[in-house]
Length: 169
Image 1 (cartoon, helix red, strand yellow):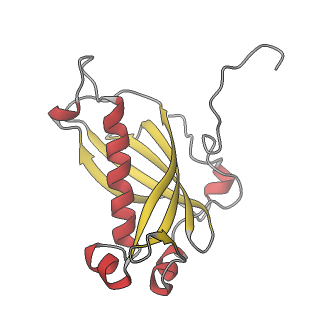
Image 2 (image 1 turned 90 degrees about the vertical axis):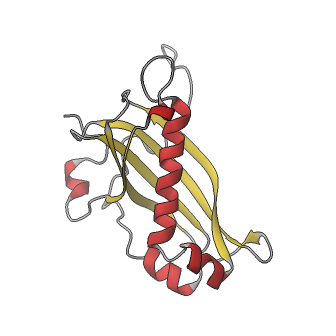
């Protein structure tokens, strides 16, 4: 099985965190008989919500801190199709952060561990009182500090750009 996460030496001591386990529901299947491309984005969005819960920004935490997270940018790579009823697992790794942003990388796998898709995202912490970017609350920053990060090289598919490759360029 081909691994797109990280080169073996970068994985030592640092494994992605499993955030979400679900199944492909009938409503997500398109006219081609497999999960619609928009539904991959839905699953990754559900994984962001789970990440928020794990760092203390569940419903109660968002209200207590008057704080939430917005998605600024996402880059989705489709690797393999999946079908109705198939199990899905989404893993996550923190690539970078500053006082109010998270650069995260998600990988979606099927029940056999095959990579289905990746989603690289830039997330921004926001005050819900001012509706402006704001530093992570201290307790949230503490949870973020414990998120898995690469030891060395980033995932192979992280940082990609879209473009048509031309010969000689």
